[in-house]
Length: 294
Image (cartoon, rainbow, N blue to C red):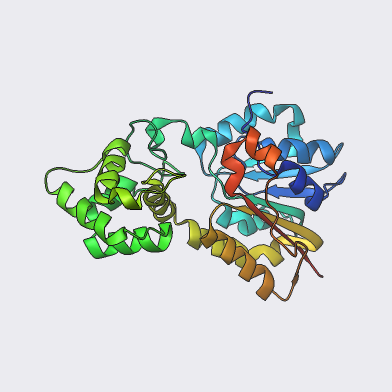
């Protein structure tokens, strides 16, 4: 296989998902196929995975990485909001397991031209699907100051949201804000030094907020959460890995409030010290698991 992004909470996902021979599983955010490769191994010889991803590069790499599994894998270049519809189109009444890993992969973070990271200069794109229309640069240069402040605060938890939004509006009067380094530098100037966080870059929350808005991540998550019980067969399991409190609250509430689901993880599952040491990006991961009654 080609290089595969380190799958987060892999042992825990396999433990809770319990892949078996003959089972059908949906990897709703396929990435480069790290989780799916193990699901396919554990469900051999006839278990299947239907992998969804709207990132063109991810789908192409997953095809290479999962090629040894042949026809046991079906690739769908689409957002996970279409899982229920696609399964219906394929005549699949339900699946034994659904995995949704909401994290970014190195494929996005380590490519400057994607605009997800402030570590290197790149265009402020942030679209998971390059067929979509609105980029982070579009939002920064087009939204009113009040809307930007709300976006930074509600999607990023940024306490200096109003101040940063004011700086954005002032800066764009001189010219458009179009690169990651421009935005990172602006946020660093906007936030007083005494309020700079110690463990993360000062622009982290603003980048998160823009990414969530560009990709409509919370709306998409709410949609698939509403479909979970219809996607699963009776006794089928759903595993969802989230990476910030907004996502985790939505998952926790949806699992609790759905009468067709029973929560299996009384406490949220988090990575151990060994995994965090090997893969520091896993430190924010939170796994919740439920199954369908009947």
